Length: 335
Image: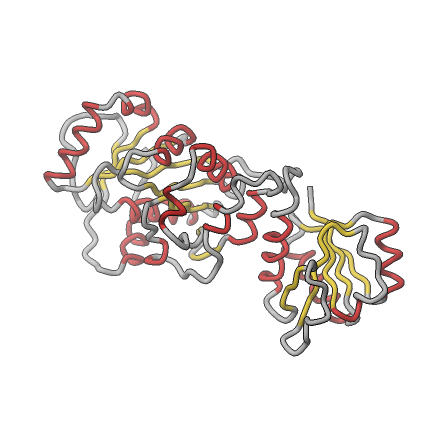
């Protein structure tokens, strides 16, 4: 179900600009109409229900907002918002239209409850984990995500590490994933729509920026993790979940949800010892074995037969993390 938006400013040129852009690039999510007079606004809302109205300050005096679920006021940098009622949300007028759309989705998600969202995808979920820190788990996760993106598929990278490494690979110019965490327990929020509103895109990969505080990640409940995974999975063809090395609630939930699991190791004695312990001493591995691929990273090999699926990745001699994962993305992950 699409969000119905009414653009109502006194500038018909601006109305057409934003309406045409939304119709061309965001029609899968938004259904847009526009008007440039108070009378036509009141007539429009009397005939049709709108979820969101984007208004400029000149349209506020005599219009009826009772039929609008979420009125938002467009304020330019040179306009004073002092006369705008405090209960009305404000959006900066002159900015990228994609940023305006993101702000609409974020704000509407917080009040829309369990209203049916957009046509959700059914992502294949791949969890990437290692019992050993430093094995290159994040690099492997991003290499795999990049390989999926190269096949013209939409891929969502979800980092659930204790200490996020997103900033080491992507520009963090969006809102923190903590914005989503704050809404996970709210019955009035549509989490998938909120994620859609604040997610970022780079190199063909969709992602969320790092938490404001690592405690934000650590206090998530099992239900929170499940809701987050389901919401992100609805926005892409494949969801790649990057996990911490601990076997905690995040790992267990990701393993349960995943159709594929990559367990990463490297050619060091500690890494091999930890992998051996996990595969031989923990019955969890027996439960996930059929959907698990072991990934020998950094030119390593795996001694012993733990699973029929094995991927060997070469050692890339570079300190540039982006260069490493992009080179590894050419590897064959299909086994």
